[in-house]
Length: 402
Length: 130
Image (cartoon, rainbow over all chains, first blue to last red):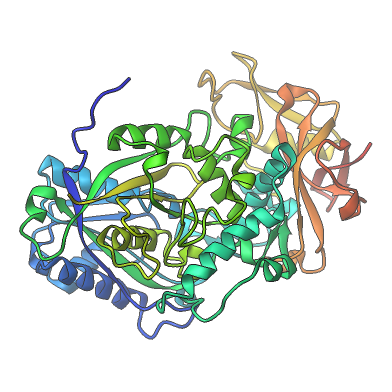
């Protein structure tokens, strides 16, 4: 079913913005102020004015309401506002939707933003019911699906994702050291990025292996951070981008979705999806749309909810065969600058900050501009993958403008 | 503590009587767990409940050492498993394996259902090594 994607390179990211990043509780301003600050900086970076913004593309759980942000910032007439379901799975989907909107002419300039202050609104890693930031603390009794998980102590994200990691280890021989290699690569990049929450806090594989167990096989450093901060990106057409201040970064391909049989409570999903990030269909669409393959990817930003899911994402995205993700990453494959596939060059969710993945898009843009603190020399294509094994997920291929 | 709702009530009332039952589509015969209002294969809302022999194997597991809820503070370390039943369409059932030290737990371990009466009204099906 080869058909050309009419949007290839036709839309661009023209501005990025972010606040400082902190550990939960560290933010010096309210979550709403941070959201506004990130949008202002992204629009400034693009060389646009706030009145030029006529669209907002957000994802579920965003507490900084788009109408409040529009009012506070004096945005133009909004002609497109959308909200994608879920959390970190959406980080690339919001950019996809922004691209669709500007390509269709529904809006001219769409901003995607994410603000999270876990210190102000509660953290995700605990026992929660519901999804995204709309979750509530668990009471004494639980109904619905939760009645079939929480009485067994299955309550947190780490515990749920550990079940997949253990199955991957069983089927393919993946080891905890492989998970650790993901963390080590991310932390190493954070040491070159002063924005990173873990700047100045290097991590060795030995320290990863010594770190306390959270939910076997996941140790502390296999779990993404929780953070305070906000970031934003500005999307417009590549044609309009030519007149703007910054060199545009082309959106070569964008894809999103959910594999048949997945979703819902996920216990009944096809067995092979227990050892996959569920991104195979997205990968197929993404490469076809961008007109390139895995061997053309120079650098990647891969959402780390948990390290094992990154290995599964690497397999789904075609960098190695299914089940071979562990051996594939041995020998520094993911490390900057010498590895075949440097990942998470700002430190990623693990070591830069956890903004539900939108900060990974910002870093992808920096790579394509040649401005990363761990710049991959001559990089032409950056893959960005949103939350693995969190359907519906999403991904982007960014291309350095010719 | 589980709180039965209209969809799951037959599961919990059977458990109270010491039976593990799994929901089956009354139209196409597909089993499903967790309980749901619709069959994902044929979208029928008609269902019946089939008694399982309660035997299966551990499909995957985790051992929780970091408590995230006050109710589990004194329980850590504890395991959470997915049991693949031998019958009832080999559905996966989230549960615990009781009386099993962490080092003994492994994928593929045969288990059988046991019933944990946590109150006068509530009985939770868990599993034990068989």
